[in-house]
Image (cartoon, rainbow, N blue to C red):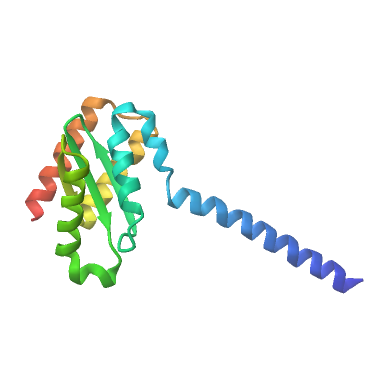
Length: 147
């Protein structure tokens, strides 16, 4: 009898741990489609879909104004040796896919963090279009300073 209770308890704990893991993974990988609630962020969502399928990219963050697309990619550590080639290839692919936009692509950790914060503000709808434009210009200026 005691063995049955112990087995049930272990199954229950495993079930709870499994449920908890699902919640964590959904918060780590925010829904790409959520950004598309702003109709002008459709380009950012499309660029994220395009790049997330690549094997040499861990994470993608993207935001856009009416004429500028800011994309940041995080590559695995072992891929950093060929970082320039990766960046060049994806820059070209984005320029071909979105010819009406000025593409800014960065792999810098600080720029990735800033773009991620901006995305989060946008999903919470705590920022206006004008503030988005100013913040994107600031992030681009910061990325050019570090280069």
